[in-house]
Amino acid sequence: MAESGSIPAGQQAPPAVRPQGNPVVAVLSAWLVPGLGHIYLKRYARGLAFFVLVIASLIIGCKLEGNLYTVVAGQPLTILATLGSMGMGFPYFLLRFGLHYGGNVMGAGYEYGTAFLLTAGLMNLLLVLDAWDIVRGKKE
Amino acid sequence: MLSHFLLMVTYALIVSLFFTLLWRRDRREQVKLFLQIFLGMVGGGLLVAWLMYPFPSGPPAPIP
Image (cartoon, rainbow over all chains, first blue to last red; front, top):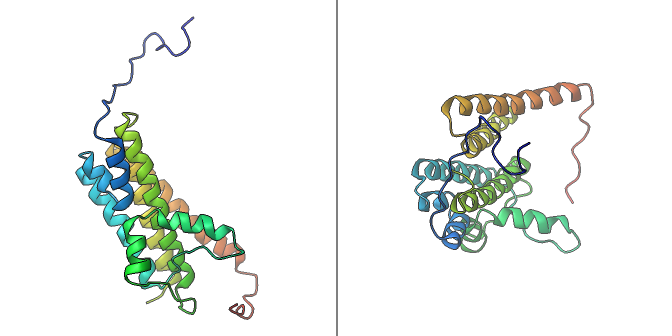
């Protein structure tokens, strides 16, 4: 009987992925600019593709005048939504404080735009986790 | 040009491409996963829309 954690007979060990890069730089850059963490980790094509996808979602959300969440007193779920939206990193703060974007609740595409904007933030949070896995050598 | 269907397809396209690139490396597996997610989202949306079709839409809800 094989020991727990050992490789069963007849199977090859998965190729070890060598940890690379600075974890703090990778995670911070991945959060600040969508795809930048992957580019830092030399996954250029993937990083560029992620950048395009997240920014596309962001632009569509803004064009539809969706809500860029902020915390509303008495509505605890807006805390989670705000954290999710902040996941998009620098673009969130640029939109919120630089361009004073707030969405338009009367806009015809308000609900759709909100979904696109929130999705952009959540996708970027997943990219941060992915960059973390790559930098720790858990993922290729 | 605000079409519900077009927006749904665009959303499904972005999300399925994202997860395909995030979760798969092999091209063949990427295509497979992309089709699964994309068709699942669009098909699921159409199915839910079809199930809701008999319900009356009613007047729009007042904006708080």
